Length: 165
Image (cartoon, rainbow, N blue to C red):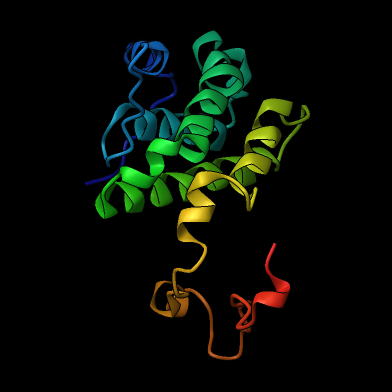
């Protein structure tokens, strides 16, 4: 069965995401199949089929407002420390999907929205709660061994504290 790539952005999912993020007791659902993942994937699909994602008003709002808000919350909030390992793994997968979106978006003009680049800098900030929580987590070689050949050298965390931030 062929994969169908939609040429529209799921506004109804954005509205659900918007309500969840803006609520006083906010929730950013990061599980596979939830609104954030579907909106990220839809944006990637729009870009892949040659559409300028920013021409869709809902997609533009997602890129400029809700991506930064969602990632700020799942990266910087102290609640990160209390979330289960399963949720932490889902956040990691969502971060990888976001990085894919930025990489794909970099491949065409007009310039990348500054909010995407600011969000990218947030997720690489070694002082955000998510990074601090996982700072000492051992490197997972198995995750990348099928993606790179044996000769490829990957960076690893330093063994001594002297190089930490």
